[in-house]
Each structure stands twice: as structure tokens, then as C-alpha cells.
Length: 279
Length: 279
View (cartoon, rainbow over the protein chains, first blue to last red):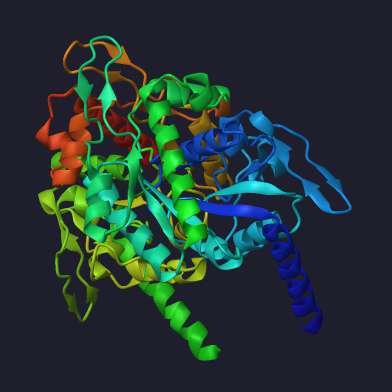
């Protein structure tokens, strides 16, 4: 028992040592699945790296049972290397460092049937045993919900700079996302703001706008719960296409309204962090 | 310890007694969040009830941290009643019986911050202490992933008739959904088939079709893994609108292509069950 607690202390020491080298740790959260959280995390990471931070951005894919970041960022099937300091993360565009359960699975169809405590163990290892190095940003993409992974991450990582909460506009989504806001507040983590994804669709043929998942839900949560609103990303079929091809939308289609909105959101995140520093 | 195991046996006895009164128990699963699993479960339940099964269909919302079935089916804020046999489920359209963590939360923003084992406890109670009565169908809507809830449900419920696996067409989704297929097979549950949701979008103004999340991924998984394909539900903004209003799309817009496809899928499910019975 004493040995076990010694090992835990040693792990915590390693986590703190790695995390101290990372300037900003940002969590991307949603109460509900399928709001495009991983797509948002991927594109935000690429946008942050693109603004003069090559090799200085990392993504921790904390979705243990459904990891999708490596596919979206075009870094699948990389063989990770291990050395004395630990496991080296995979590398994506602009030198983005990525760690994900996907790298440890032999085949696409291998499921991870793990109960909560085991998932927390994996996340601790992602933080303690991965050679993150000096980074400006580490984005942590949580699985949907306010369950084990979310709880573990929020409790394990020291000094989280802020949480971005992603939602789609529908009312059904709002109910669940409100829980994510309260969850974050209860854990005393600062909320950077709410991002409304899949907000309206413009027909590429006729230009008519259809609100497939409705519009305005993010703003409404922001008003109801008095948390900042970051912006609305419209639906663009090329976002899904680019994710499937592993080439991030934000650089590939940088002239699109959705990419421009992403960049505005990145500016707001940077402003939030600057303000935090001076406060 | 002996008392605890006595209580567990008593709970198991109650679960088995309730489940024996239900002709068919069907699990709705997806590896990935936001593929519209809860919308599919809701509309399938309504469709099954609509075909001459008023008061004979139930839905167990096993998404403990993000329950959305009550909102979608228009049964929110119902005060559940308890009597000597247990808690009585809420009632939706066509007498559909619903149990969900949503009925036990005081406010929309109350989050459920539970670790895995506690979630399993809740699900056991939903099965043991709810007065389901005689039903033709119980649909169990699992949260995304192959984690605790999925594992618990599959292990606790005796004689699951079959599993419906919901996906969206994108490749990113496919990787994760393949895991759900293997998960189901490992647990020896029969797979009824794969349902491709959000499959193509027709502009209501000009009729142009845009593949927002691409098309054909469900069929591809079905071919790759040799499991039946149930059908493709196209994107229709009224599905989200109706879910938000709590009036199921399938009865409200029964003439739409999406509703017709839903009904065809219900026929296939019934065929599957008939075949199982005669085998």
C-alpha cells in the first residue's frame, strides 16, 4: 500500500513537471456528443499553431473509447516511439503533438471496453508519461458528458487556464450543455466561453439558408447562465470532408465563412488568456 | 457483506421478473456521440407504438449524464409516482413508458458528476425498481461509447433480443462505430443491423442534395464487418425542430421521406424478431 502511494506521488510529480512546461492548458468540453467537439478542438489547435506557433501546440485526445483526433488531423497509424523520458507523441501538421488511445489500438474495430477507473488510469499516463516538451498550448479534447474522463482531467491537471464549451443550437442540446457549464463552475475552472457549432447551413447551389439544427442556442445559454459567447460556426460540408481526409479545414479552406469565424474565436481565446495574465 | 449480496440477489430477482414481462428488449447503440441515437430511439419507439401497440412500448434512457429522451418525446417535468411495486414510469404519446435520469434532476443545469460504478447502480435501479408492466418492446437508449453504461446494460439485462447500431456516414464516425460492432459481438448480443442517420440533405428551396456528413458509411461498415444494413435516414431540419418541441417527427411528418424510411426500418426490425422466434 505504501509502495502504491509512493508510485502515485511519483506520477503526480511527473504530471506537474510536464504541465509546468506548458503555458496554457485549455479543455474543450460539451455535455452532449456529436456537437463537433473534436472537429472544433482540431481546428482550434491548427489555428493556434498557424499563428506563429509551429511545434508549440499539443492535443490530448481524452476520449478513450471513441478517439477521433488522429484521423481528423491526418496523423493516424503513426508508430509512437519511447525513450528514457517517456513516450513521444505523434506529430501532425505544423508540428502539432498528439496523443490518443487510437495510437495504441491494433485495429479500427478493436473496442475499448473499460470501466471508469481504468479510463482515469490511461489519462493519468497520457499526462505523466508523454514527452510533451515546451508548449504554448495544450488542448484537451474530452469525451461527451460529465463522467469519469471529464472529472479525472479536471481534477488531475494543475492550473487549467480555461474551458471552451461546444454546443449545437438545438434546445435538446442546450439542456445537456447547461449541465456542462455548471460542472465546470463546480470544479472551479474558468469558462472561456460557449461556441455554437453547426449553426445554420447555406445551400451551395442556391444560397438558401436552412437552420438544420436551429440557430441561437449557444447565445441563449450564454445569456441564461451569464457566461461569454465565443461565436457561431456555420455548417459547411467541407468541414466533414476535410476531417475524413485528415487535412484540417481551417487551413485548407481558410477563405470560407466558417474558417474566418474560427479565427475570430481564436482571437477571443487569446484575449481571454491575456486578460487572465494581467488580472 | 452477506447482507449486501442478499440485497444484490433480490435486485437481480426483481430485474429478471420485470424483464420476463417484456417481449422484446432492443438496445440502441453508437460508438460515437451526436449521431442522433436518441432521436432514432424516440422515433422508433413511436413508430412501434403507432403500429397497434399503444401502452405496450417503453424507453429506458440509459444516458445518465446527458438524458434527452423526455424532452424529445414531450414528457419532461412529469412528477413520477411511487407505489408498493416500485416507481411508475412517465408516459409519452401513445402511452409510451419512459424512465430517465432527467425526471430525477431538479434543474436543467444540474450536472450528474458520477463515476462509472454509480452510473451502473442507477441503471440497475431503472431495471429493478421501475414498474414497467407488460410490454411488447423496451428500447434502451445507451449513451455514446463502449463504457460503463453500455457494459452494465448489456450484462444486466437478460435475453437482449438485438442491438441497433446508429452511425452517421462520415469516415471518422465509421472508425468509432466499428468498435461498437465488435463490442456487441464480444458480449454475444445479436446485431439487428446498422442504421445510417443524417444521410444527405435536400435543400428545401431548390432541391439540391448536399452530403453534409457524406453518404454511404453505414453500408460500408455493414459490408466490411458483414452485419445487416437497416437503411438511411436523410437529414430533415424538421426532425430537430420536432425533437425540440417534444412532438415526434415520425407521426407529425409521416409523409416525409425520412419518416417513410423510419417505417421501413421498423418493418425490418419486426422481420428480424420474427425470424429469431422461428429459428
